[in-house]
Amino acid sequence: MRFAELRRCLLATATCAATVWTALGAPCCRTAAATTPPSEKPAAAGAEKRTPPAGIDISKLDDFERKVFFRIVNQESSACGKGHSLLHSAKKDGACRASFYAVRYVAHLVDSGFTDSEISERLDKRFRSPRVPRFDLAASPSKGGGAARVTLVEFVDYACPHCKHAQDLLHQAVADHPNDVRLYFKHFPLGSDTIAWLAADAAVAAHDQGKFWPFNARVWAQMDDLGPAVLEKIAKEVGLDVARWRKEAASDAVKARVEADKAEGDDLGITGTPTIYVNGRKYCDPLEIASLKDWIDEELGR
Image: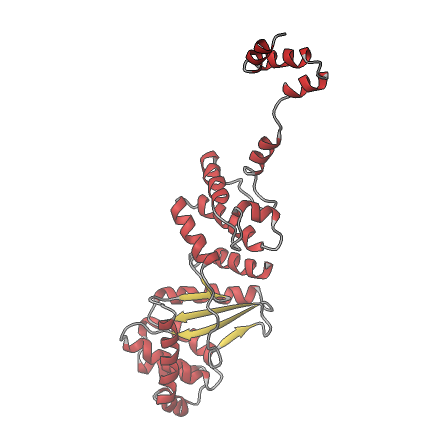
């Protein structure tokens, strides 16, 4: 075969290329290699991007929701700030357990009807926002495990109905994890609501006599009727030294402690109540036990 014919043949089809190799005396294996189907690695890689990590249940998602789920977990970055996708991190990076919980969180949000941008925003808030380095908890009422691995800090206004709802949720979390969760209570009366401030002062004075939690429970039970007379009635019901309680509740020292809590919340940028922190991360999900439990499980699983 002439050189010109060889050149034309090289520029033609794979079949012609095989003829050229044969004409040049090349081994048969060369021809076979040229006609072997492409590597199956790309297909395997594609399948890897379309399967959830072990332990992540996406059975509730329909076909469209699954497409949304896999699009997001393949586009979003690792929850630990590493240079690979959330899905890859959850499957391959054993040192980043947060990514597993982030992928599970995406599945829940997709099932709940959130959009891509809303999910991305929530991932940022939950997994990528900096933690509060420390709270001043020395004088704050608390309950739960003494060596707890998870600290819940709540900022509360006694005139806030949502705060009342949150109490059952938070106390259930402590009851469900008696050794691993500790709850701290912070006062954050909003605006100039006189009753909210009076109730906070009264609760601090009750705390000084070791009766904060029973006093606190009765305040929530009667929040629609709160006033000086009702607060004093509660003080009697829980067994306080009422004369001492009355004097301390009106003292500058007690008022300063409430104001210190409020100032701490202001410094954190809190604008509404209840505001809850889970090991320093601002809780940003609905006030329901399943969602809070997911945050606690993540902290315990780190």
